[in-house]
Every structure is written in structure tokens, then in C-alpha cells.
Length: 231
Image: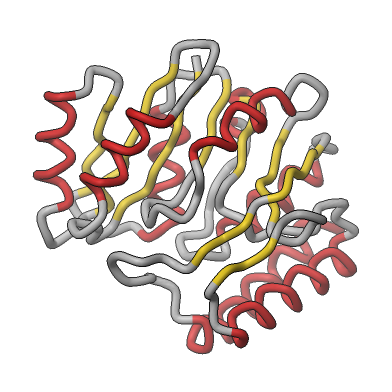
């Protein structure tokens, strides 16, 4: 089985369209489920998901009473996943479901498949230039300092072998969780595969990441991860 883990916080504008689209567009050659994590939303995200779970038998919902941020939502989703393959995806409809089959096939010869904006064929569409610059620079620096073979370490669209990702102890709560997971996978000598992915700026709802405000926090968290990587 394949489990698609989707963290969702205050996504009432998009969540119904997302789930309905996934149910129609996902095409996999084995059973699959969607595990949505309502991360303490204070809008109608949780109610909408509960209603959809009655409509779609392969949709399960985990509710957080209080917001635990991306790291907490991913931790709950990964822990609760029933599949032997786990795919993580954002709730903003920027991760095309047609890539999932290719991501799953890539795991025949790897432990992790990354949908990458920074390999040939990948990119960012209608995304502000400052966001493109920050993302690209951050990934280049991470590659150099952490000796990562992956070009898009901050991608939230990844497929994992379940036993491997479940063995990772997630401690980060914020958006730096993607780098924490990568760092700990590097320590485990995981085998990586990247496939091209074009990220289009979200059309509905609002991004929860404030790039400029997040930079000081990222610097402190990456410093901690550097010591985890090399000690």
C-alpha cells in the first residue's frame, strides 16, 4: 500500500478541491490511501475533511487539537501511515499527482525519491524571484556543507520507503523539518533519486511560510543540523 500524507492548516479554501482532484487523478498500480493531518486549524478545514472521509473510503483524517506546525503534522502523518511507501505532499495543490507513479517506480532502486525543482526539466513557475533566489541559494549551501547528492533538499514532495522514514526521529516543528529529515537520512546512508518537478505558485489560499522572517530561524536550525550531520 501507498500512503499519501498531507499536512493541512487553515486550508478551507482549497482542501475539498484538492482531495476531490486527488481521488480522480491518482493512478497507481497498488492500493493507496490519503492521510490528511488537520493541524489544529481554526477554520473549517477539519470539518470539510471529516465530510470528505465519509465520501471517500480511502481518506483518513488525523486531528491535532492545537497547531503543531509542519514538523508535528508530518510526524503524526508518518507515524499513522499504513503503507510500505509514504509520499508527503503539501495541501496547496502545487504538487501534481501524476508524478506519484514515477516516484513510486524510483523506489525500486532507491530509498527516497525527491520531486525536484532544481534538476533538468524542473523549475518554478510564477514564483516571486526573491523566493526562487532564496530557495536556490539555500539548497546550494546545504549541498556543499552537508555533502548532499540531492539538489532540492527542501522539497516537500518526496516518496520514502516506510521503514526508513519511520525510523527517523523528527524533532523540528517548523519548515526546517525538511532539512532535518534529509540530514538524518544522509547519516543513514540512504539512496536518493531525483525526478524533475515544476512548482507553480499556489492560486488558492495563502502560504504559511514567510521567507524573510524565517531566515534567522533557519540559520540557527541549520547550525544544529550541521553538528548532527558531522558528529
